[in-house]
Amino acid sequence: MSQADRIFIGGGGDAYSEPQSLLLKYANRHGMIAGATGTGKTVTLQILAESFSKMGVPVFLSDVKGDLSGLAKAGSPDFKLHDAFMKRAGTIKFDDYDYEDFPVTFWDMFGKQGHPVRTTISEMGPLLLSRLMELTNAQEGAMNIAFRVADEQDMALLDLKDLRAMLIWLGENAAEISLQYGNVSTASIGAIQRSLLVLENQGAGDFFGEPALNLMDLMSTTSGGQGRINILAADKLMQSPRLYATFLLWMLSELFENLPEVGDPDKPKLVFFFDEAHLLFDDSPKALLDKVEQVARLIRSKGVGVYFVSQSPADIPDDILGQLGNRVQHALRAFTPRDQKALKLAAQTFRTNPDFDTADAITQMGVGEALVSTLEKKGMPTVVERTLIRPPSSQLGPITKDERAAVIANSHLAGIYEAEVDKESAYEILTKRAKSAAEEAAKAEAEEAQLEQQEQTLKRARKYDGYTSKKSTGRSSRSDGLGTTLAKTMIRQLGTKSGQKMIRGVLGSLFKGF
Image (cartoon, rainbow, N blue to C red):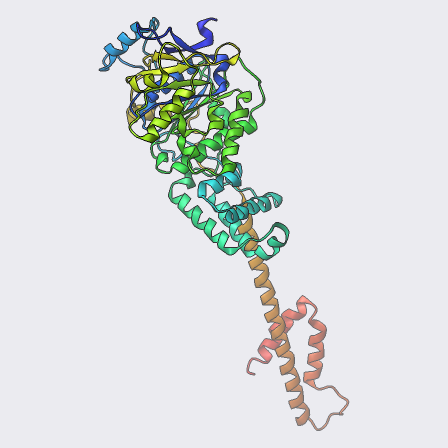
């Protein structure tokens, strides 16, 4: 098979295997990059991203330490490791090794180090939001009811103020809602509102809103056919690990829901690297783990490859670990019983090589070395091989702030996501309803006050009639008094607006002194 159909990972050398590569046709069958801190995981991620990009495959990855921004700039002979890189390239027979930059698009949930990333409350959904806020079962139930009612009443939930307004409405109408959907307690509503406040303080307010991220913008290529490398700035985001993990899971879920089935393409439509993958699984409820497993199992048929990056295979649940056919294992250190257990698990995940002991090799490898096993014929994993990872072509380490700003300014997406848009949604709809209800209440109160005034006027008219009757001696007892006649006239006029105006005008002055 030609080299155009595979990605070169490394290999070569006296004590090492033949060159190791990853077949593009099996790259959507997921993978894993594991190893202790400082053993070379980030460089492996970098060289895989470079290679996918050159093969026309778009990439999405999170940059936890800021180092991966170097993908936007070519390496340099002035770099202190230049000689070491050239020596490594010669050792592994990487003959066409050279420095080059790659088409990078920077993203940032907070809009500081890249294009803003947003989604709507509705798109996130009640399950992921409940997980993000660590809600109880009762609180999650209330959240589901809020989404259901908003959907039935055609009220879009776009940002946090929409969800807050919907929860307030839910609390005010709890008695009526509970009859149809089940009990909604004010305690649950209050707890959710407090969690939303914490979420907003962590910066999630910037994440929810519009324009929402169009996932197709993550799957674009350049005019020259290179896949764009989408880099999410995650250094600040990692301060809220649950928000980080939930956001990346949301992206995977959206890709799974919206992309068409493509079967087994010649190369992936997108490759997704999930760094610090253990954050996705720590303390996660079973419902969420089931969703992750479902997405991981089925999303490959959409042409998306998912690569988990973590310190140990033990960080990943067995049901998901079993689906990761392409593996790069850097060194692990077995200092504690837990470390030894993780080391044993890591060794067991590979197809055994009779030439060396896998567990021993994992502890003996240096920086830039790894055990590699990828899928080959008919999707079978290859025998594990000890491998020297190839050097990167782009800059090792971060670019400067000015260089990053220049990349963002010249991006093909510049100006599309920067300005936030506030459309009419649940908050505006419920605010209008509340205003209309207040106006109706004020109108009813005014009408009631007017009727009361009219009643008082009639009482005064009768009082006046009685007073004048006593003073009059020349009139027939059958004759109506002035007050009675006037009262009858008023009664006839009460039903008309003109009559009401007349009463306010005439009687208001007539009985001013009473």
